[in-house]
Image 1 (cartoon, rainbow, N blue to C red):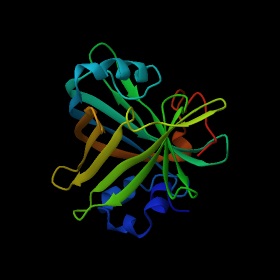
Image 2 (cartoon, rainbow, N blue to C red; image 1 turned 90 degrees about the horizontal axis):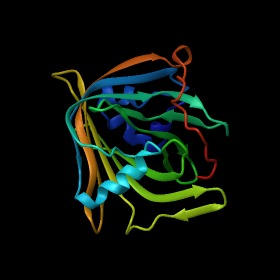
Image 3 (cartoon, rainbow, N blue to C red; image 1 turned 30 degrees about the vertical axis):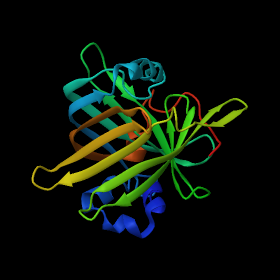
Image 4 (cartoon, rainbow, N blue to C red; image 1 turned 60 degrees about the vertical axis):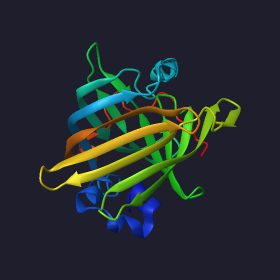
Length: 226
């Protein structure tokens, strides 16, 4: 069984740097989970008017409402089977900011229907986003978000571009330092940059079954709709 990321990328997966191939092979098939620890050189925000929206999202662990430099960082990519029988991988990022840690939670599944990785954001999976993954010529990974959908009870709404954010994630591996480098930027087509962070981390691989999914890592609510 290949990982959800390899399935989404097809032949492009083999063009990634070998260390990125291993990191994005985490899953039930490989039996590996990945825990990364490092530091974000900076966490930034756009103009002042975006702060209330970031603060609102932070109540469900979506985005981070504070800025900082040289912020200790942890990312937990743990595979498990969700309540609907789908292979799922956590993307839980914890930023150890002054005044207390902040989390940015996501859980990812492969969507054969949409031919992409489906990214459920936050503690309650209210937001679902299509992710398109591709390998860059230097072996780095580029992830771009697509359509956003809001799900709550009977509501299933497409988020208008006017208020939505487009995410671009670039992840690479530095052979000289043995560290992964990540750069994330979320922008709005009309209002410009909203949020982002960049920095480096080292990865540690553990047995997924033995390590398990620690308490509080899985979302409070799981969404079946793709």
